[in-house]
Image (cartoon, rainbow, N blue to C red; front, side, top):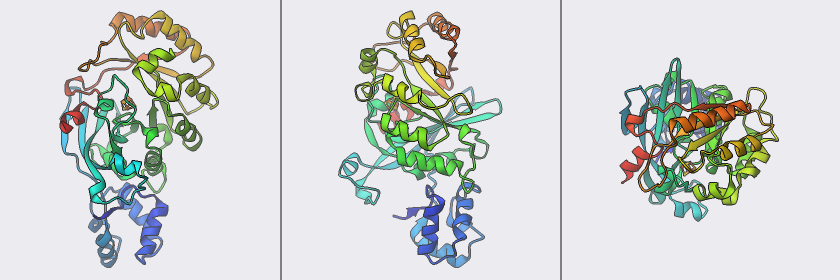
Length: 358
Ligand code: SF4
């Protein structure tokens, strides 16, 4: 099995070229081929000598994984399906750290969704195959956990989609909990924002979490990217009944942490709130949200729920959602109802990959 160059940062590429006896400046050239010109083979790195390319090709490959499935919505949203091989949970539990044999890898599939919007093209990327957070309303959560994506798997999604050269934004809101795969997600963000990489501003990237507290603190310290928090219910017992994470890291503790950081400048924090009829859509819920977010410069996204099998709740009605929005807006929390995109291609997170895996 060849080693992927994709997903390596400049320091690691310097080590690769040193090990191969190549001049140090070759590392930056390779980074340019991987992340700016986005080549698929080492042979295309034409400013490297033939001998250097041959030496590299003995051990390494670029490592872009082409998509294996594609659905296109009537509104232009495109859902890509990628095959991935992940470190199996057993291997992870045993403490393996990346030097895994082929037998330790589990086949899976993840999605990336490209959402066009006027002059923007946002890629919603996956960070894990499946998810171990077990949110009851989520199709990905129902699949269980199949493994962390490597930084190469994450960056490959950006390169393999047809719109690679015109992507303007990224959201880590696909399959998996990004902060449960912290090192690989942060490595991918480093590659996206470094001047030797994609050279994106961190303002173009939003990381979404349900509130993995220890890694959230690291993320807030170590990155300048926007943050989105899946809140979904202000009341602890209700939230716990939908999201087991509430038992480990209550939302109030998550908010106490977030309030220690500055979101009045370029960095934004937003909250995701899926509206379940008769469950979390009352005035009491809106008022509790207003109380708990007091003093925080933030936005709220209300989300209509797409019904999934064997789950008791449906989405709240349009009137209820509108009233909820008004109540929050009147209190000073900028609140929008997220436009539904790609409904005709099963855009609910995890559906396509779930079908594939079954
Ligand atoms: Fe995991 Fe997010 Fe689904 Fe929860 S909502 S199970 S964190 S993918």
